[in-house]
Image (cartoon, rainbow, N blue to C red; front, side, top):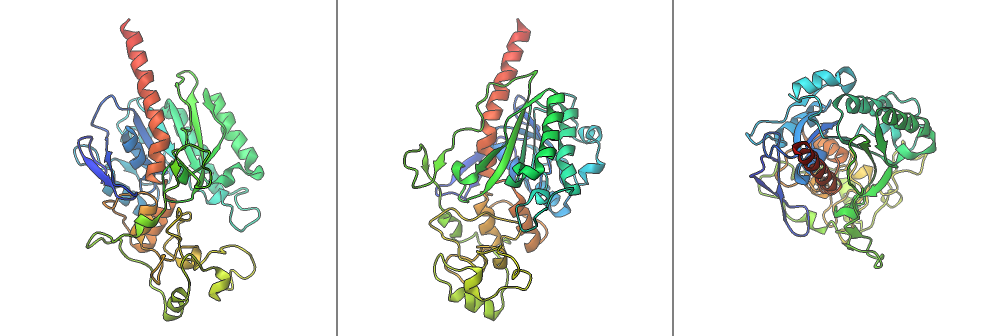
Length: 391
């Protein structure tokens, strides 16, 4: 679990284990304060802790995800961070701030990834147009307007930048401008470029209070690169090979979806790195009319970053989620490792719920990489303001 600043959590997701120094609301009083909206299982918060933020509170509607968050994101006294587990559309920013015991102006950063289904790139031509879930992104900004953080970071799927969503995005930018926030262009970021063993592209949007500017170049320069781009700086992308090492004894997430004998036979006949929907001879009627999910029943290539972990990442019929050498889908723990959650991270609610929480999460290491320069800029701004006030 992620606990106080004196605690060490081991990140066992990479090629070399690294130590994560965690922070919390009651430790290191000078650390910048963050609130996580649409918090999910806590990937964004865990990364914020690693980046040097103190978590003041969170909102998450899904009960299992909220329970997972509480089980892992702790304050220095061992108590869970206050998670408001209700529909954000029914929660007033003022009431949430009261529950988090935040004073006006105390929040430095808001993070969050509103549910992305309304902007999904999958299948339906007009998916997302008029979808009530898209109201959630606007609601996110209402919290920004009330809490007045120095900055906010929004995460969503690349479909958010599609032309048919331009009126919605324009309205969001209009609201931000009216509230005196400068908002950078939406940036499509691949998690693999920041050391995550997964090819995962998501949109991130940074807004900064123009009345309290930050000395900040963002996003930070990538730390990793595609292997063929030798002209670029950084190490080659991390492969996912290490996530398939044995799990800890008794790990409740060391489980995979059970498959019938016919499907196991398909997996057994699938070569390394091979497999596809057409090769499996198992085209479901609901898939026959379109060309999606071409990689279903495919084996993950351990010599490359893993494919994007989705909410169905433990289901081989939903993507290239078959173990590289064994004849079954990946385990929940392997999926969590691909998302750079440490092996100490618990997921509440059973196998399907765990897969959904893992697939929805912001990879911990990506969150840390993107938030670390923001934390440094906020600390520098606060120090400068304090020095000016003393003079």
